Each structure stands twice: as C-alpha cells, then as structure tokens.
Image (tube, rainbow, N blue to C red; front, side, top):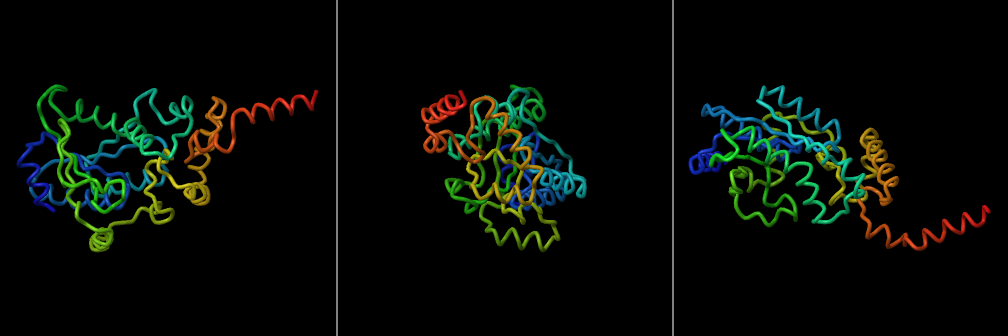
Length: 266
C-alpha cells in the first residue's frame, strides 16, 4: 500500500497531501496507515474532514477526538453560504433516493468546499499548474456504487485521488483496527452508517427508525427541516422524493379533500 502512495508522489509531485477522513472505518484505516507512512519519510500532510452540516454530532466528535489524539494537522470543510442542506430543503424539499440526487448532494455539501480549499488553500496560486494528492479510503468492493472504480490512483485536474487500501476487504480493515487498537466509530457500529451525512439520498427507509431510536438529536433536526420543507410546499419525508410521495398522495385529490373539508365546516 505504501508503494501506491510513493508512486503517486513520484509521478505527480504534489504540493500538498490531504488525508480524507469522513469518520468511517475505511477512511480511518486509510488515514492512519497513510499518516504513519508519511511521517516515517518526513512528509507533511493535513487530515481533511467534510462537515456536511447534516451529520450526526457524535461522528464529528469521533473525528475530532482521533485528530487530537494523533496530533494530526486538520482542516474542516463546510458548504458555502447559501448552499447549505437547509437552503436546499427550503427550496426543493428533501432529496430523493436517486443517483442523480446523490451526486447533487455530494457536489453541494462536499465537493465545492473541497475544490475551494484545494484551489485557494493548497496551491501557491489558484491558477498554478500544481497537483494536490488526496488520499482516501475507497475500496473496490466497498459498495455497488463504487464497483466502477478500476484504478487505485486517478487524476482529476489538479486533484490526484489515491486509494492505498483499494484492494482491502472489510475484514482487512477490521483486522488493521484491532492490530493498532484504533477506536471504532460508535455511530457506525450502532446504525451501520458512518453518519457524517444524513442528506437522505441513497438512504434506506429503515435508517430513519434507527436514527430516531439511537440519535434523537439528529432525528429532531431532520424533523425541523421537514417542517420547513412542508411550509415551502415540499411535503415528502426524509429518504423519499416527490415521485414516490405524489404517487400515493395525488395533488388533485389533496386539494379536493381540503375543499370538501372546508365545505363541511361552512
């Protein structure tokens, strides 16, 4: 795995290296392994966490705790002003569980903040032809969504995406964490998701019951946002979308019911 990182550094000569730590166990293994390797060769790096603004607080605290414990240099990204999850819900309602909405949420809540930091916080000038190495915990067999990844290192403009644990299995990650005594994210162990993003795109409906039972604070925030969505004409619930909602609640019938109700009162 260290050879994957070394090869990327040799080929692309990055001006800065970011270790992408979401709070999940895969990203922890990648971050911990890469940090140890880079420290051994005297190479500086920064751990980067994307704060989506709609995640479970305990996951953020888990990230902060590990960063402080290992004394890693740290940078946290946030959605841009006017592009928060609440702004989106107010304008469009909860995003439906589709690939398209997942991409929109990733771009809005994570991608733009990261691009801004790479461009203005890592490179010498915004237009400099310099590379920034981003080391992630993506595994080839991690999910059906990511099965399309065929290479452990890919270039995207100034950003070089490098996945040193690309060929690891879930068991490999579990063994690594046990070997080095790395603490597990309690959110991941309790509800089977890392919890850094609860946008609802690609979420299973069962997750709502799990979140509500285990992390009522996060559930209350989603309920608050739902009331905002309803007030702005977007009544469908979290982890759902307008197509599914209106299939069972046709707009015409809803209006007719309301009219009949008013007629009865009169």
